[in-house]
Image (cartoon, rainbow, N blue to C red; front, side):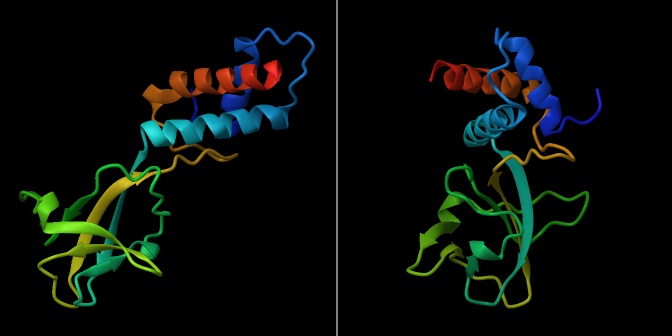
Amino acid sequence: MSEPNIDTYTNEIPSLLRDDASVLQPEDLKKCVLRAADDLSARRPRLVVEDLTSNGTGDFDTADFETPFEQKYIGEIEVEYPIGEPGRKRNVLKPCQFELVRLPDAVVIRIFSAPTSGNDIRVTFGGRHVINETGSTVEDEDYWYLTRMAGAEACMVLAR
C-alpha cells in the first residue's frame, strides 16, 4: 500500500457503513477522518523532536517550536541536555530537573540548571497527527484503528 492520505482513509469508510443511499458526501467523510485523527492524537500522539537554543535564562518558550505545542497531545516531555554525540549515551534530564511553566503570556519549559547561552537542548513531546492530500503522520499499525474510529464518527453523523 502506498502512503495513506486523507482520500485513502475517506475511501475506506463506505465499506464499513451500510449507507446504501450515500447520505454522506466526501466532505462529510473527510471531517469524520479528521475528528478521528484528533482523537487518535490525544490517545497516541505522534512523536515530535525539536532542538532549541538557550538564551541563558533556562526558559524555553514552547511558541518557538516548529510543531504546535498543544496541551491535549504533548504527553510526557523529555529534555536532553547536553545533546549527546552519535554512539554515546543520551543525557536525558530527570523530570525533577525541569518543569512546564505557564506564564501570563507564554508556556515555557524551565530547566533549573540553565544551559549557557548558545547551547542547544533537544525536546521530545507528542503532537497532533497530520492527515492531508499528500500524506499522513499516522503510523502503519494505527491505520486500522483510525479507519474504524472514522467509521464510528460517520455512524454518529448518520444517526443524527
